[in-house]
Length: 452
Ligand code: ZN
Image 1 (cartoon, rainbow, N blue to C red):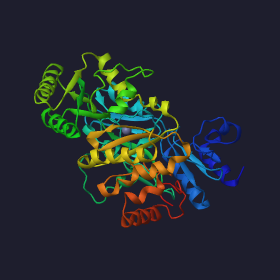
Image 2 (cartoon, rainbow, N blue to C red):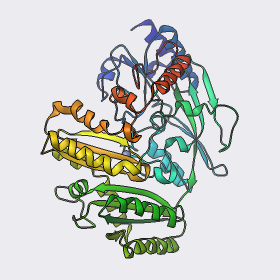
Image 3 (cartoon, rainbow, N blue to C red):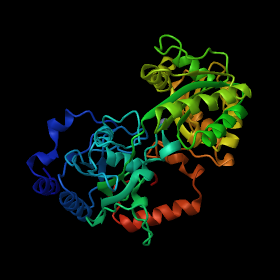
Image 4 (cartoon, rainbow, N blue to C red):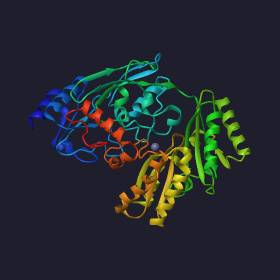
């Protein structure tokens, strides 16, 4: 064992460093590190980083390892730092509506603790069971209810973070308003572990909704889709919490066997929208939801619709939207997470489908996403695993001229590194690198992620 690993063992205890066979037994995506160090406190994280900083030892921060862009990939010369032993919920403050947590707590436990205390933590993603709250910060996670509650960035009031040299920045602030100079926590949100290790957080909680209204509605044109979004946003009194659009191909896929979902609407329409509203009064919320949708149908904006009548029907509607696994039928497939401003979204998707069909007439192109946030998920299958970079080039080509983004909610990691300059100017990239150098002069934190 190297002197550095020995020193890390002295900091975090004998069981705090995992190497050899115990390391080999762990399922680690994207490469095995030299060791996994598991500090139990902020003080230990600081000591670990100080030692690594002095030794010039690269450190790969580990959360739940559920990311989608290989931001936690590691090599045999790199040490992983896992927050798995910092997994305590420290405080729930009902008056301030906050929860103070250690960064290694899984997202689902945060949600459950908020619920048990009569409140809600609104961020939700499919990987909730294993994704950690610290990982959600590092990636600025999004998910299905961003339209109402914002991304992870919007759920954070205070943060404690350890810099590369072991400096502890403790800003465990509980207040919403705090204009006292730079809001340093924002730097670390979405930084993919390249600027510091988040150790503790003060999360913002929300009132728990008591009613959930849901429907699937159909539209024939994209103009109708945006008209429906505007109407619901304006007329549902701020309760619209999801506006998930499924293009026809994807809707057919997830409502046709072997998919288990039964189609709430037939397969004749161009666009299907899962609409959800969360409110505070079941009877009046249901009445308003029905009234707004009925009016849209009478005006011919919504061409067909089905309102969920029970919790089972609501769950079934979400299951249809989330049955992304069905795309495996077209394996090999390439998955994308992009943003396009709504006024350019329709032309973008049309051009994309034409460009793909020009090259691969039998391609599959499934489009769905969080339309209210301008965020689309695109899954492309062309029957050829080696066509990845060709497909990437086609998917990303239409974005810069439209003011789109090559990554809406998954981050850059190493998978999208080559395309970062399509969404960021040379000046922005230079500023990012200046910040990186200032906070991590020895380049030990997740080196090579986001940019080189
Ligand atoms: Zn998503």
